[in-house]
Image (cartoon, rainbow, N blue to C red; front, side, top):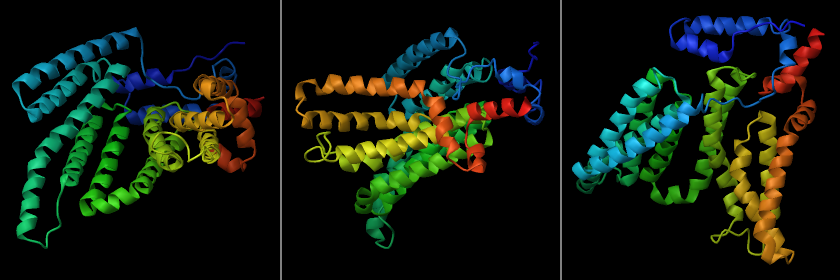
Length: 376
């Protein structure tokens, strides 16, 4: 049987970035490919089932350049700190990250260096805006002493200003470079804005509702990630990379508030380990959601809590001396077993859902199987 030759998603992205195709033409080609998918179904039988294709590196050159960036930017920050105050250091780092991205991101399209440069740029802009905002918020606080009708502005307002500035900067960065992690950086900036606003309005309230607030922000980010996932169920376009980073941001925002109530300050569940079972039940529910949406970030974020809960159960059973290695052994075995059974488990879970809902969930493996069956 002759396998038909198709243009890969990587080639389409490269053609768009180099001006060979316009984004609209690329999307029309993808739509045509989806329409003719049953014709190319035999190809799906020889392609590997990779449900989370991520563009971290395109070759060892990415790692080599990333090492160089770490050395260069680290040394640059050292010399900048000796010559300038904090504001100048962060401004230099942000400018350097942008200029380096002009070559390594915009021209070379190197994945890992682009991610590192975006993170350096976003963090630098955040602290740069915060350093500018601190004097402004201090002045506003003194004004509130003169005009009591004005709300008191504390350091939380500086966080709000820094978050808004960072969001605007990363939006400009995305317009220029289209790095998939950028929307997650923007979402993180907006989360800091929300937390800062609550803290500025009522610091006592912020301490009381911080966990529900983080959970709400996490669910909002998760919903945004799912919108990208659902728009690209076969995970062939840049949208799947954007969704991955958003899921990676949403996971700790969701997992930590849900489970931290079961953990004491010393890191042990409950007073006698009785909270271990609720922790494991919560982890199981998160695992089910992870299987449904075909994203492992929720599981990774909950592994530490699952380990704490299992260690408490081991200690309660009287095997205190071997609790740590036994916990590591069980967690490792769980991860390996889940990895081996991920696709069969997904098929079993999705089979229990209504067909319409199952088709809308990110599900490249099952969709491919369905198409192969329908074309034979």
